[in-house]
Image 1 (cartoon, rainbow, N blue to C red):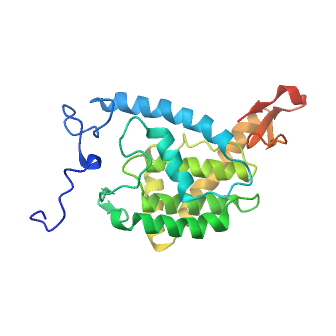
Image 2 (cartoon, one colour; image 1 turned 120 degrees about the vertical axis):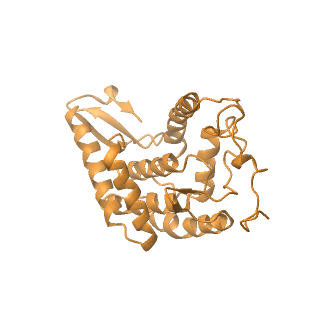
Image 3 (tube, rainbow, N blue to C red; image 1 turned 180 degrees about the vertical axis):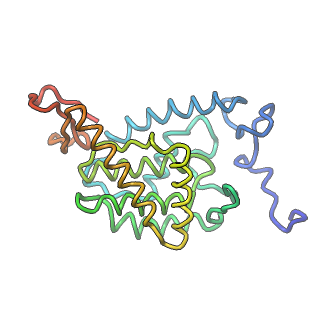
Amino acid sequence: MTPAGRYDTSTLPEDQYEPGSDETVLRNLLGITSKEELEYVEEVRFEQLMEEVLSRFDCDHCFTAADILGLHKFWLDGIFIWAGSYRTVNIGNGGFMFAASAHVPELMRKYENGQLARLTPCRSGREEELAAALAEKLVLIHPFREGNGRIARLLSVLMALQAGLPPLDFSDLTGERLQEYFSAIRLGMNRDYRLMTKIFLKIINLSLNACRSKGWRFFFNDRGTNFFCLYPLNSKRGDERTF
């Protein structure tokens, strides 16, 4: 035990930093000490993950905790030794503490048997509330040491695709809007999802308008190989763009 009465986690890989990084980069399998370089590697791998998931899942898939672990594993495998595993350290952000690590497995089990079982596959007509509630719940649990926000947003994208929506664009979540997003997460502790629903409604509308401005329409792929296709208006089926 430490003097503060807490268990010492400094020997755990999740709680170690890469030597020479001034404690700005988590210990990684690539020996990267630059935060910018690691972010670039993660971004490239995340793009690969996006391509993978759109062929792995279909519009009738009921998501599970194992799926979420698999997404994290595919994304960060080879970068962090703990990729695809629930965190074993307690973490927080700006004085806000996420769920204690000891409770994460049970919380994820309840998440799977509750929200995921009840709300996926996601159907048109209720996608805004579902995406907001599901994404916020996952972020509140914060099951991983790194990458929780992107995995939660990816799950929201997959749910939106199930509901017949285009890929959601989160690029507007910067500056004040990003702070509003964090505020919405905190409100979720009291089961108040109104702000998060408002944020997701805006994201959905922006994504729809961007799609329409380019003259694309979208619907489920009738070949069953992907979630859906985008077609230029007044085009033939051979002109499709598949996501």
